[in-house]
Length: 119
Image 1 (cartoon, rainbow, N blue to C red):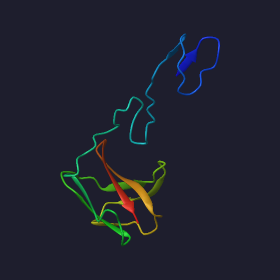
Image 2: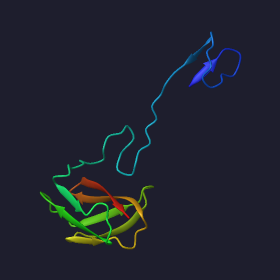
Image 3: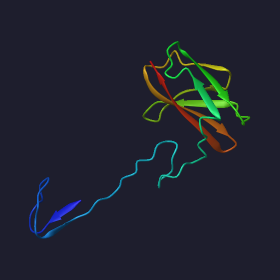
């Protein structure tokens, strides 16, 4: 944000009287609360495995270790739920368009989240 005395500042301008301040803008995703804190624990890749990534044959193999979770949700890049179901060894993603998606698994109030790509 910049403010110049008695005039409008232009980009990359130097001026004698005025002020310039920098701010950070945080845009929360469906998996974050304002302030940037996660709404649940995000597990490391050693506890949630997806393969192949990128998905090329329409199916993604899933392995969840250390969890009794039974349901999943798949979100597109703008946060819309595009699929839901029960966790099995493979998930059919052949109906999804090419792009990046997030797989979310709820486990007793905690979220396991992993990003994957459909080609």
